Each structure stands twice: as structure tokens, then as C-alpha cells.
Length: 400
Ligand code: ADP
Ligand code: MG
Ligand code: MG
Ligand code: MG
Image (cartoon, rainbow, N blue to C red):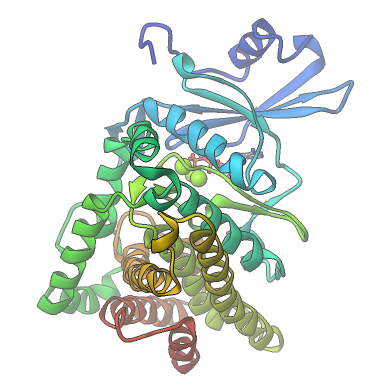
């Protein structure tokens, strides 16, 4: 980014920019609307009234609005997000928005308009079931996490790629908000008064603090592969048939289980929330669907990752089933541990999820918050004990 060139766009100035770049032909014939939540980035949807064609312009802002203050954030994350989308497009083009144009000086990515999709979190909260999610996300995870690994790329290419994804500002956010602040009396935390006792006992749990410190160190030091870095259900766009993963601005080289854990944590939070939210006559169906989706996401991931590893991991002599077992067991344990941290932080930390916060009944909401914290703790503690997703889903069934 050349700082003197960069300026945040408005609904008007973005059109002038697009016209200059030849991406639209006539400013008078298009509409433009900013639809982002405006905390970190602008998202403009631009529609051509004559051809009905549309595009999305995402622009990074140089700060994040958090706890009433401004947290300065590198604009370089727009490049990182765009390059992560382009990397994913090499392996799973159907599962990411197409990038049409980018401009690092303006921290801008112009991409496919996915307005015919809905955000998965929102769709799930409306009670919709998406039958292909586990196949799509399992595949997305296997292809991306394998193809950027040392086993796939070899030492030179891997390091060349990893160099493109040094993302200190955004990793710092995760380190603080996921692994640090929720475990102490930090200013950024946010939880209701009636949860204070539960939170206090968590802060006094030395065993948990130690396990989370180990996971934090893993997050900071294990550059296994290129991660999405923020793979919650708000980063997944869906229709009945299609799945698109968006918003990889937190992308960096980290432990593979972090992405899988993020997704599983968000399904887990939705499951816990649905016990309070879903109509009684639909609750069983939704619950079974969510548990099945957790199990199948891992199953699809594991099968495809193993295939890729046995086909092209390291040297022929080394790509054995025994080695695949070793790699996948490590990823599975990390998945559970990171899922635990991600679950706890959504209750105690700065950023919450609508699934839980939107539970109208106060007693129901408290119950869900307590269950989420307890589930997070169990995930962290049992990460070497629970050998397959069945252990997690059995635990979740036991909650209700
Ligand atoms: P942020 O990093 O600020 O969270 P996101 O990339 O998640 O930004 O986008 C924020 C919102 O903007 C999304 O939840 C979605 O509603 C909308 N959006 C983002 N990308 C697209 C797209 N390609 N097509 C349509 N809407 C989009
Ligand atoms: Mg947002
Ligand atoms: Mg984002
Ligand atoms: Mg987002």
C-alpha cells in the first residue's frame, strides 16, 4: 500500500474508481450500496442497471473500531485476503468468490457478487439445513490445508509462499482475543453480570490456563500450512447447492487444526443455542443435522487429506499410511483444542455470536452460555482423549 494514494471510498468515489479502471462503463447506470458492518472493512455492492451484472468491492480500513476505540490495523491485510482467495481458487475454485481485480494501493479487492447466497450463521438461525456443507467445507479444508503444506510444496516453494502471508496485526488480534484476554480480567472482555461466578472459576482453573497457554504457543509458532484464519459460520456463504468461503483476511501460516476447530466450534455454538431457540417440533431434526455435519466435515476432511498425502506428500518412501495417521491424529487433537478456545472466547471475550446472544429468554441464554463454556473446557481437556468426532457429538447429545 502506498499510504499517500490510499483513501477510504464512499458510495460515490468507488464508482469513479471503477469507471477509471474500466470495470463499469457508465456511472449514471449503476447503483452502489455499502453493506459491510463497517468495523474493519467496507463492502460495496455495485449493480449495473442495464445488464443486471453486479460486483462487490471490499476495501480495508486502516483501523478497527473496538471497545469504542480505534485499533490500528495494517492495510496489507487486503492483499493477504486477496492472495488467500487466489490460492484457494487454485484448488477449490467453486468454493470461493472469483477475484476480478485488485489494487493494493487502495486495499481493494473486486470480486464476484454473492448476494444470492446467505451467511451460514444466519441461515442456520432461520432454521434452514444445508445438506452439502460438510462435503464442501471438508473438501475446502483438505485441499487448502494440504496443498500449502511442506509435504505438498517442498521446502523452497513452501517458504516462498509462507513469506507472502506474514500477518502480524491480525495474528495479534487472535492471540489477544482468543488465547489471552478471556483467561484474565481484561478490559476487552464482555459477558453478563450473571455469568461472573462461572467466569471467575474459569480464571482460577490453573489446569485450563496451562492447556490454553500450550495452544497459544502452537498458534504462534507452528507454521504448518496456510490457514483461512477466521473460519466461523459468518465467513461462509451458502445456498441450497453452493458454498463459498469468504473473508480470509486473517490468513497466515499456522496449525491446520485452527481452521477446522473454528468451524466445528461455530457448529457447536449453534447446536447449544438451538437447544434454546429451535421450535420443539424441529429441534431434534436440527440437532441431528448439526451433529451429523460436525462428524461429516471431519470425515470428508480426513479422507481427502489422506488421499492427497498418500498421492503427493514428501517422498514416495515416506508417504505411508502410518505417516498419514500420525499427521491426522495431530491435526485432530489441535482441532479439538482450538475449537475449545474458540467456543469459550465467544462467550467471555470481545466478539460474540448471534446464535447465543440472540437467545431471547434470559434463563435460556444463561444456560447456553454456561454450557458453551463447559463444552469449551471439555474440548480443551479431552483433546487427546476424544479419538473421533463421535466423542464430541456424544458429549453434545448428553448436554440437552
Ligand atoms: P469483514 O471482514 O468486515 O467481516 P466480510 O468479507 O465478512 O467482511 O463481509 C462482510 C459482509 O459483506 C458479509 O457478511 C456479507 O453480507 C457481505 N459480503 C461480503 N462479501 C460479499 C460478496 N462477495 N458478495 C455479496 N456480499 C458480500
Ligand atoms: Mg464483519
Ligand atoms: Mg473479516
Ligand atoms: Mg467477516
